[in-house]
Length: 408
Length: 80
Figure (tube, each protein chain N blue to C red):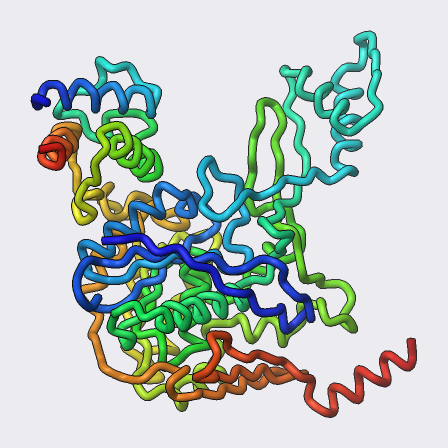
């Protein structure tokens, strides 16, 4: 067994017209056998499974136990939480200046009646002052910026990065069954896995997810400062990933309107219909979700499973109830259910059927996903690792945009 | 290296990595018995043990260890 580390150029953010500066890093654990049975992407959510030690062990486990090439990809905004050990660079935490001023006001109020001696020149001076007042807790708002000044794209670029990584691994000559490509993820990682299946309907043989949402969690793309709470002594940081989208100005490309939401909807009927028509062999889905999940709606998850099943997909959804908590496989009914990714894979992989077939790059697949104002077009080119992606406005919408621009 | 030597060194690593008393670490102790022994800590622990003993544990058994005794046995097997 050996570890392979590679990197590929990143493709531009085609929705926002932003060229990305950092490469996409890939780490693959390759089993010792002559030909691996397939390849599995380990796609971390926003939590601890992004930890470098854990990822390393998980890759080794899956490669050895299941004879699969086990791959981690530093896809776009893959890493947006501070962790003690990170494989792909560190996240920076930037405190909102206004929240420092608010906290200073609270400090003054908290210390009324006591002689106040404020000798502060910088924001860091204020933070030191707050940290010294250990009898009170102060809340601050902070942005988490992934390495390379990335921002929260919410899934599309991350999914395309993984697909490009697959093509690159194939091109390097790794010996594995390319018709058995699997995506394993929990929460946001599972969501990206579903987007990969949407964007590569002939490539992904199976998605295995726990607690994956079916569509964009909008509170994660509007600076809600509710994604993560990080404490540092008596300071509590309410965090939000640095944003690429905004919700207030509809005329701009970075407005997160219906088009942006629908392309990110892994259970949108009209788009699933397109995938169904384009797929020679349909992706298999194995999903597990808590009926008490407060982050990812169980109702939407059930609707996703129903939609997949009614369209002829081999889709299984296990809804977890409090009585299913066994302390080993399922540890709680909270989001994620405390299910370890190795256990999740062991649980569902034996139910996945290996079926021969060509992948989208071999088929030169071209997908068009219509949305209200624009269409998303994905074109596979056998000569390129990248999927060519664009999202032109419909002609009537383009005219409307031009009129809007002329009107100022 | 004897089984007892392996246990002694593994216990010390567990104590250092998880910040627990070495007296808490006995052969029957499982992750449930020692505070902070979650899946992330387990991963760090395994990699630390591999580093200290200069060995590579079999990948397919990394998550299938029920207690300290299983871990010591695995290290002893790999250390031969």
